[in-house]
Length: 303
Image (cartoon, rainbow, N blue to C red; front, top):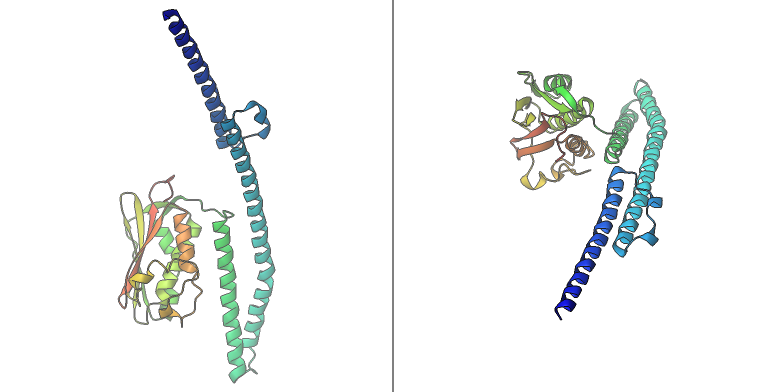
């Protein structure tokens, strides 16, 4: 009996070892599949279903489907890129012509009264359409990864000095102060970040009444550099603070003002793609403070 039990134990031990080795081999194959998939060089021919276990076969089909999906996504991205390029190209000439012809008509001294007003309205709407299409193209390119931001170490003071909004503020009777202090740097794409900053400053100038003030300043934190745009305009209610960064959102409070509700959305997308973020503090009838946080170090993980 003892000999029988010993033999049985040895047989079980051998079976367990063989089973362990088989599972280990399966895990090694799956690991190899995943590793090649992560490297981006997964090849269907490297793994034949006849040689694989049930789990390995499922993993193989999963990775194969993922590769097919990746190819489809890339094809769709290229199709969107072509479509955006076509829209940009096809709309640029007619809109430019409309704006040119309306400017010429505005200079015609024979047009008076109602006709003059109609021409002014056409010119105004053409400019609005031009801005809308240009903004939508920028958003589409950013969202689809066609245009990417390239953060590098840049000067905050140089960014603020590039705003060029004093004349516009003076025309609206608003005091615009840009507080440039000690040199401050952060990692950001200069061109795109300037666009985001301009959108927020435009928003502040638009909703600050004549005689009001807009102040732009910068401060330093441990991990971020912060640009603050403070105004004493109409302010934003608490329930609307989360909505104003969504695409095409227009507050009922400013429905009579010109705008399409894209500027703040685009600003948030640009800053978020650089591992930064935007904060808002606001109170109705007292004003708003938009804070743009930009990382002080490169290669920061996106939030």
